[in-house]
Image 1 (tube, rainbow, N blue to C red):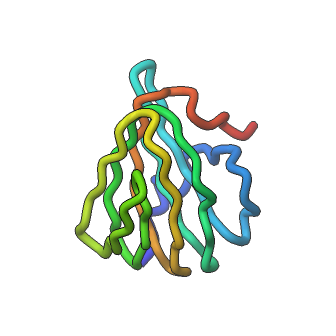
Image 2: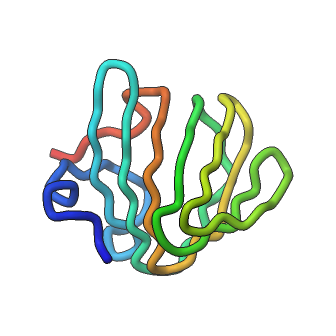
Image 3: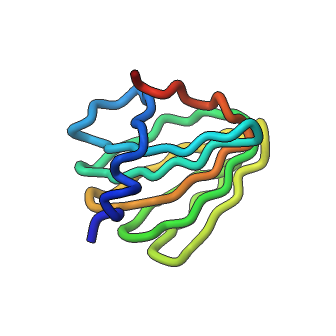
Length: 111
């Protein structure tokens, strides 16, 4: 099941991955950013760091390495990544997640 049409109609964000790999929709406020990600193909997310992030897996599976520790997250699992902690992931096709970022400008909105 996809995210509902009204969520899929939210603006997309500029991520460094092609749209045939990951689809995005976002809500932004002055206080943070809520992103809805749908991974169409398997994807490796390279290690990186930024401000605080919290997320939950809606469907699928992510093998997340957070601060050097790897754990597999599935539907219903949530994760919290403190600011500045390096993390990367192996994400399976069909995975859907909701990520909340403390930085409202974490990603630019596509025009």
